Length: 483
Picture 1 (cartoon, rainbow, N blue to C red):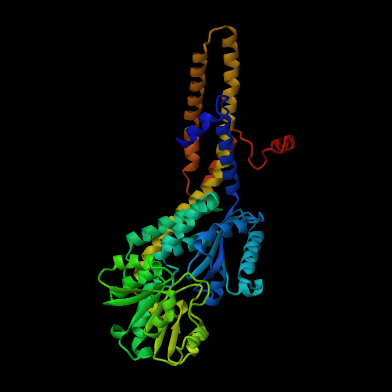
Picture 2: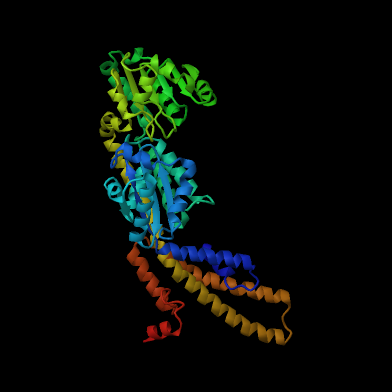
């Protein structure tokens, strides 16, 4: 049906100029997309330490600004940024992989303030089907620190939505890839049991503190006084998991009271005390475990601040930092009786959960392979677009030529009214639509690349179509083919 609509408007003198321009732009985008290859380059918790990842972290509101800057030199045609607490990744599409990768690496180096040579030691880079597979595994939660965690799907969806925005740089190929990843991630969560149990950084933090409480604090977790700095999504998830461990009371320290008050409504069975940042050190001083989860780019707690506020050498204290960039300085471990953990310390805690999910991971990968094949088939189908356009162009050229011969004679004899002329025009377009529907449907049905290329060659020979690669080269191109 799509093909028929395209044919019916081609070369139609009555077609509005604006519609013709829109069609031409879409054809140019399709043609340009044909030569684009997908890549991903970045850092993750599997490849880089948190002190490197935090240098590249970008707030979600700035993802499109970053992707636009990456594309600004023209070496990268499409780009989308994904920045989370565990990863920083740039998905990009380009015709020249070397130039595009050099551009992305240069951008990351400048943003992180690190030499390219040092940055490359922490980077991973994947291309083509490997990049597609990576995007699907990320969205499905298979590449996460906590296998099956649910937050990453929402983050990939946000990446996809930003890429389609007016100031986004996703383009045709990249937006399609990210959308396929979101579809795959949803299937994994609905068709497997991979998301059951502790499946987020916040849940791992709760589990870590519970396991280490007796060793670090000489205190059962059930008796520990808890506090959390920040009141965003991570805090909400944290309280959810702490509630499953019989949490009864917690103190939230935040810059404003609105979000903590929302959490009070969401968790009516928990006694939530709200404090502002001015009371931070008073709260830290009377707490046993403090979770830190803010969007600050600076340390909220470090050795100097603890000494300054008289907390050095006091009662045992556990600090659990689940922020990236980090909010708790590593030097807090130098303070007597203080034990500080960050997201990298959660790896050992989640190893058991990963082992328990091996069966679900295998099932998830089977589903993701299907989505990968779907994207690859769509990607390869772009190679048929030039032939379809040429076929439509030639058919409409013949239609117009024969119609003009016929109508010229009829008009001269005065045998045709304007209404009758319009009916003949409409009839000729319908005939072309019906004749082309079969060949175009035949060309689009192949999932196998070799079969599709063979079908393209057959159609080119059958209808004596001009080779898309030689189109526009003038008579020399045509004469060479005849020879």
